[in-house]
Length: 204
Image (cartoon, rainbow, N blue to C red; front, side):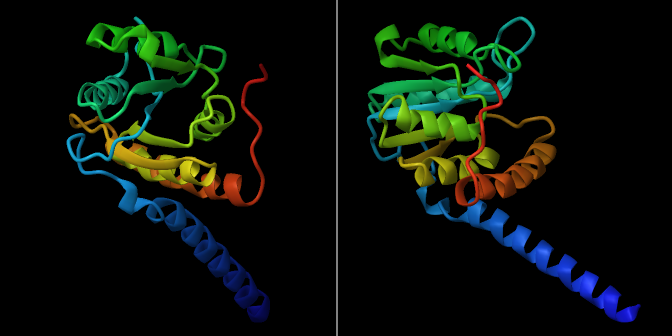
């Protein structure tokens, strides 16, 4: 009985160690590609602004608003020439894309310089489709810091030479929970890249 218990504990220990390795590999591999600010960001042809939740009235959530404002700052500073907004078109949860485009246009980004991908239902799809649909091979990824390491891992591993600019323009409620959730998502991101590519959550 003790021998069986030792074997089980060994299996659990190895499994935990592997999961920790996979998660930290995602979180740490592209840390050096995170720029400290918009002003210090290396220029790229395009900024990829990742979607986030939208309020019931259609306005962007605080996190999404900050991502869009950071994308606009990169555009205004001449660090990027265009902005790709990528998120849910409403077929999965809620229409993020309409809110994102409206916000950028209100900030002053011309319609011609905004590209949109309404099938970016997950970060994986956003990065993959940026390459396969839009032909992007170099970009600045814009999202909050807790999400940025995973986003850079996915985009770089899927074929984009990507740097990142954090969009943390304020303090966010439940940031600890968001961070923990992203660590769990990082484990899945490693599997998505190294084991098997996931199917999109929506068939379109």
